[in-house]
Length: 368
Image (cartoon, rainbow, N blue to C red):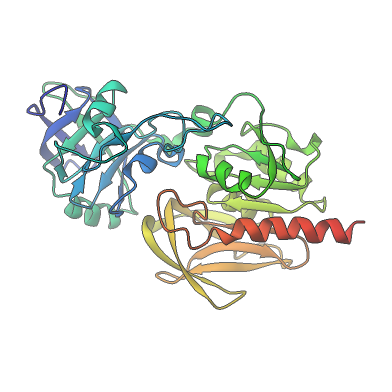
């Protein structure tokens, strides 16, 4: 049962002046940010704690959200949350069609509304979220917006103008595991499942802040994590990356990491007309000819027109033919725009972590 009543009305206001009246749940506070959507049927706990959603008001198109509540905040031996993708809620607000006020699950610790209330995050229900998603798609997959309580107002806030990794990345180096492979993981706002995927593969992980000078570290492989915001604001790590690309150690970029690797290789990025925000984005591997269903959340994409000829497209999106990853023709460098770690979403492409570990094996043999 809820610890507070969900009866107060509130407003969703979009930057074009559109206003939607709705019922409020969660914390009774106003909020401003970039309104985006997600089409998943499950996985709201993971999405809400995904740092890629920092500064965003998340709209779910699936009509029933909150039906299985929120699990406990338990941690593994490595002090990694077992069910969350970071150590806190990252979204600035939540918009749903129908709120399930009597949730049930064997692992439930509290309701979605109570969880938002405790963390001072507002939610709106009773909104036609599929209509909003269609409106957002016509505007590049997102619009600025704000959730307003009665008799309150806020200015619009565009998170893409900020370096959001400063808000979601760690501030000091953290080491996980004691495995065979030494992985340097640059945290731009990484999801915890990247850590879990690596630890299951006998890795020792050195996790460093987004602006850390990783060129001075020794490692077997380098991973550039996912993260929020505009990739062009990350000038310092792009500089470090260009230096690291002169070495022979394998590099694996994920989501934002894909965009940064592409920029370092001479490419560019642009904002999509129709953003990729769902659990069912089909991609095609140009290496194998196989297609996969992937989890994605991004508004920017890599432009490979001016990329070095030493690179080629690794994956492409089967809906709009945009680049979903690049791979070097000679060196063990590659990246993908989607989320192979999933959580939430299909795990069809988790094999890319094995591909990365295999590239480390091959690199060992080549440099003996």
